Amino acid sequence: MSTTRRSMLGAALAGPLLGWLTGTAAGAVDDGTDRAGKLGTLTDGWVEVRWTAEAQAQLDRFHAMVDVVAPARMVLDERGPAVHLPIRAAQGDPSLANPPRARGDGALDGGVSVRTSKGDYRVVNLAGAIQDGLGSGRCEVGGAEMGHRSAFRCGLAEGKLTAQPVPAGYPMQVRLSGVPLRPTQEAVDAYTANFGAHPVTVDTVLAYVTAQGVYTPPPAVKEQQP
Image (cartoon, rainbow, N blue to C red; front, side, top):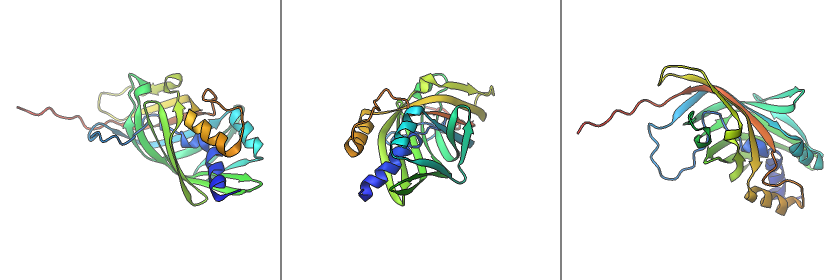
């Protein structure tokens, strides 16, 4: 197996992590728009990614075992396995009135390790972004940097958003739970080209994401006097 295929395998198996979102910080793609003063920050937060039976079937296909790289931790309960990662830094607009319009970007601490018969792959330095419901990500797999643009569609409208009631402009506790991640057609095509036929389609939910943190809105922008 070539280095490229090994790296892609590690990234593909950790794919749901590349589509992560931070609940209140979701999706920044640099389009040249000046967003100064428009994005808040997320602190004291975490992301939990729980993969589905369909994703587990792909792990089983490669006889792969997933473990965590500290400070991430594995969560095992009646709903199945999940990876819990602290948020290192994040900024965004949670769009509380219309969650599908949430956008922002951020980075996670820790990562995952994927063990297969072909070798072990550490997936670390995870970072992600969401805009217009599309999730992109980048990471390091075995020391090689990998990037995935528009790799996942994030079902923000299908998740449950809860926010602590506070006066306007004050920090608030925000939680977004049960957000499904589905691959884009580009991601499905790339996976097929490298690893052959499989049952994953753009309608396949590969993981559910829950995220929580303290969102601090940006300072109010004062109107300019004529």
